[in-house]
Image (cartoon, rainbow, N blue to C red; front, top):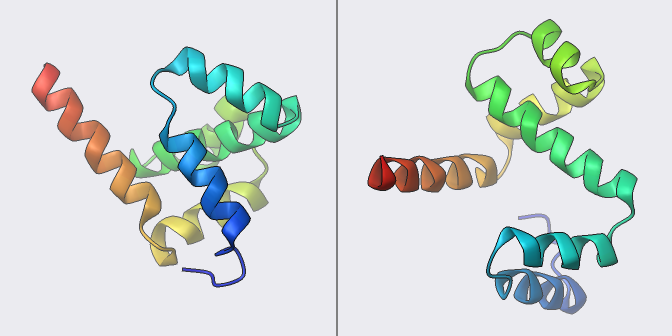
Length: 101
C-alpha cells in the first residue's frame, strides 16, 4: 500500500463509501464528491482493467473506451504489479455472478 495515501482523511472517505448500499446511493454520493470528468476517468480505468483481464488488445480497448494507450498501459501495470485491488474486486464479482447464475 502506498503510504502517501494512507491518511485519516482517506480512511474517512473509504468508511463513507463502505456505507453506500446500492448503485443509486453511489450515484448520489459520487456526483457530490467528484466532478463529472473525475468520475468518468475512474470508470474508464475500471473498464480498461475489465477488458485487459478479458485479453482484449490495446486497440480494441482504446476504440471501445476512448482511453489513451498511456492510460491502458498504466492500468495494465497496476494489474500486473499493483496491490491486487482490481483482482480482488473481479474475483468477488465473479463469485457473486456464480451464486446468482
